[in-house]
Each structure stands twice: as structure tokens, then as C-alpha cells.
Image (cartoon, rainbow, N blue to C red; front, side, top):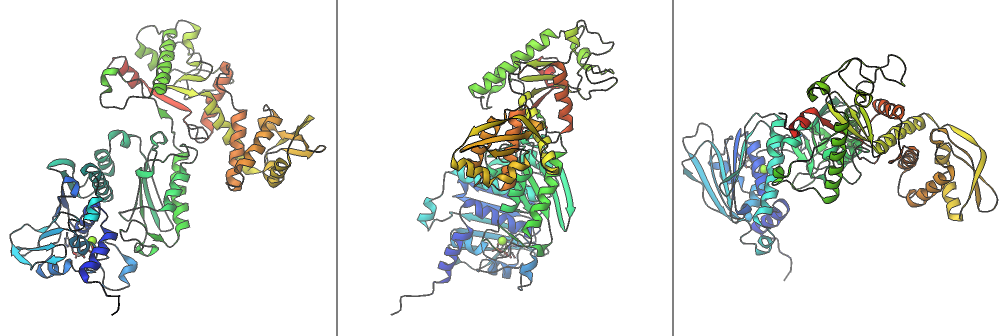
Length: 606
Ligand code: ADP
Ligand code: MG
């Protein structure tokens, strides 16, 4: 007797269910998608015990008649596609005809549905694939699906369900994705009779984000859009300061469908390169619209992945639109003043190091304001905006937007009081702005400035170099000599000229002018170390930028270095001329801004 037998239909469905229905959240996702495809305007989701006990979805969509109800739970039963051509232009969320059959194979399902114009509704019940006859019943227009006891006949699967809280987190995540992709829908989510989300129909995307996440997430979002080569892009971009430790906050939607795509994720990360630390991810809500024939969603059972016909084009368009916006936006970090202890309830307490730093900044600020005691009310002192000239910058030149000089005819007493600039601990610069003041990390900012200049120069050709009066020599190993040979082109680009100088010795003949103050031997040695460490791992472009970054770091003003007023003014002026000035090349902030509003709140003036 043969050992091979064709599985019965129910077994086939149970196995298929393993692909589509991973956990309760997958059920909620599939049911929500069906309601959307049915044209629902209003959807209510009720969950009990993290989905283990019950998941029910009520919609006001087109509904199903008795025949459709009987058919809907058959495997591969769908109203959404008919021919293979339809597969190429899918505009609905579902099309595989698998979800209901899969869900009904592994749980107890009851459906009540009524179509427009029908005098009554119909009901059908299925218990792990065992379907009862369709019977008329009373019910509203639309469809109500109740799914109970998920995996109850599959103890192995049920065992893998996590706590109600964990399963609920997954359900909320799927609910969130669908809610973001369909702002027009009125959507409600309840768990154990507790209301988790009540989203009104017709909300704006920002309103929805605020309700689903928080006000802080929405406040800093930067909006951008673009439309080229058949790809429409709309995005709300999180401020780099909001970067997260994982990619959970990359919300990408393709024609309204939430997707995960490695090309798009890469483009987003690339757009933020140098603005956030390399191991972090930005908060991004990205909406793409492309023709249905430009991609294939039929590549993954849960439809979360798609295959683009031209992934490179999508990548380059997303990168261009996002990067342009980020580069042209002032991304200074907003400072949060220390929160009074009484208000800390619930909020995570900052770590000791963080607290320490905050305290030092707060103390330094207190000193600053003590030294600069205004005459009359501080409102007056902060509020003025007279014309002022900048010493050291030439006649009549205004150092806007920084008030960096002696104010003319202002009610100030002493010279110190007139200055609106201060260097603290030889490391930080405090400067008054129209809205309040900023604190600058002098090294981080200068590093960015030098880096951007180096990049610009290198973009136009090799860095300009200068012959050393006395060549500097250093010893090196054979491996190091090999590293130099392997990267000869890059070394030349940097404007460094090296020549063998006896056995195991090399001489530096020329060195780039722009980083002339850096010790040539130190720099070249570090460069060789960097080559040995990274040249295999990085492409030439990245390696060049690592080298420029190293040069910028070494050439930049150091923390702890006292600066003259003229130097400070120069630094602030340069800040205005470079791109990405709010972040150092490693993605750390260079500038933190504080607003008057916030100060006034802290000093209880409001
Ligand atoms: P698919 O969505 O891929 O077509 P499903 O198994 O999810 O497959 O659903 C099967 C069919 O049942 C759908 O094509 C649709 O015609 C019908 N259906 C499912 N849910 C609903 C609903 N909430 N309202 C109206 N019709 C529905
Ligand atoms: Mg479906």
C-alpha cells in the first residue's frame, strides 16, 4: 500500500492557516482588510483576553448574501479577482481568498451579514472547518464576524500564544497600521470592554498620529512630498532627535497598504545618514502611490512584502525627496529644561549621567542669567530686537539671527550685560536668539562645519595640498605599507603625498591645507589604522567619508578650548552656511535650543 495520501481539505486549510494566521493579530488584520475591501466607513474591533477568547469585527460595508456567506469560507474563495490578469492590477487589500478559510479552520467562527436592500441578515457558523448551513436571522447592514477560541484544537499552536498584553500589543500594531493607511475610516478598538482607541472618520493624518502615538511625536514632524516618474511620495519625517533604537517607527504605505521593504528602509536610513547615530532609526510615516502594475503583492502570504518592478527607481526617489527636505530644514534640537521633581510621575527618570549633565547645564544657565542681570523686567530684556552691529565682522554687517554684539541704545548697564554670547566650561557656547537661546557644543558644530567644507572640496576634485618645508617621516610595517598602496587613490584625493624614505620608513611630503593645523604624522598614522580596520568592509565612497570625518574631528575646535569672541561669532556665522549644521557627522546634536516660553514656564512667569 502506498504511503502517500492527499490531505483532506480541512487539513490543507489548517496548514495554510499556519502561513496566514500566525497569532491573534493576524486574524484582526485580515478581518479589518476585508471590511475595508467591503467599503466600510465604520469598523468596531472587540478583543477579549488578548484575542484568545474573542476577536470580533463589526463593519457597515456591503455585506454578503446567503450564497456568498456559504462560499466565503471555502478555500480560495474570493470576489476580488477572477482572471490571471486581475493579479497584475490588484487594488484591494485582499485577493488570495485564503483568510476566512484559514481562520475558520483553526477557531470557532460566527458571521452575520446583511446586504443593502435585504429584508433580513444571514448567519453561518463554522467550527474548525465544520460549516453549518446558512440561516436567516436579524441583523444590521454590513458584516459582523466573531472569532472565538483561536487554535483551540491545535494545542501546539495555542501554547505559543503569549500573554494577553503581548498579543494585544501586536493587535494594536496592526490596528495602527490600518488606521494610518485609512484616515477616512471611523475605527474603534476595545479590549476586555475597555476602550483603547476611538478614531473618528475623516481625521487628518496628523490628528490620527497624535491619537495613536502622542503629541510629542506629531509636534516635530516635518512634511514633504514629491511626484516624479510615476511615483507619488508624501511623508511626515520625525526629527532626528526622536530617533529610536529599532525600526518599529518606520511606517511605509504603498497605495494604502502597510509594507516592509528593504529598499525603502535603506533609502530612509540613507536620507538620515549623518543626522542620526548609525545604529538608530528615524520615526517616518511614508506614503507611496504608484501604478498597480509597478509592483507585485503576490509574493508573501501576509502581503507585507512586495516586489517592485524597478526597486532602484523607488529607492532613488524616496531618498531624494526625504534627503532634500532634511537638508533644507533647521533641525536644531529643542532643549527640555529640567522637569520639577513633583511632575516626574510616570515619566522615566533620567539616568544619573544624564541628570548630572542637565544639572550642570542648569547651573551654568543660572550663572549666565545672574551675570547678565537686566534692568527692569526680563521680558523687556529678552524682547528687544534693535539694529546692532557686529564688531569683528566689518561695518554694518548683521549677524542675524544671532544677537552677537553690543546692542545700540538698549537699557543695559555693563559691557558684560550687553554681550549675548557666552562660552561655558570652554566647551559650550550660549547665544541669544529671537525665540530664546541656544547652547552649542563647540566641537560638534565645528566638526560638522569642517566636514561639510571638506566634502564640498573633495566633490570638486582633490583637496588642495601644501608641501611641508621639512618632510615628516614615520616607520611602518609591511602590512601598513600594503594598506597605503591599496588606498593610494584615496590618499591622493585627500591631498596627502607620501614617499618611501628608506627601508620601512615613509615620508609625508605634502599635507592638505584645510587641515593644516593637524599634526601630519598623527593623522596619517590614524588613517592607516582606519584602512587596516575598515577598507575591506566599506565601499570606497564610505571610506573616503570616514577619512574626511576623521580629518574634520582632528581639525575641529576641541572641547575645553577657550575661544575669543571673534572666534565664537565666526563659528555662529559658519553655522548658517553649512548643511546639516544641527548634527555632527556622527549624528549627535550640535545645538540645543531653548525657547522663552519654556523659560517663562520654568520661572513661573506664566
Ligand atoms: P480575500 O479577501 O482574499 O478575497 P477572504 O478569505 O479574506 O479572501 O474573504 C473571502 C471573501 O469573502 C472576500 O473576497 C469577500 O467577498 C467576502 N468577505 C469577507 N469579509 C467580508 C466583509 N467584512 N464584508 C463583505 N464581504 C466580505
Ligand atoms: Mg481578505
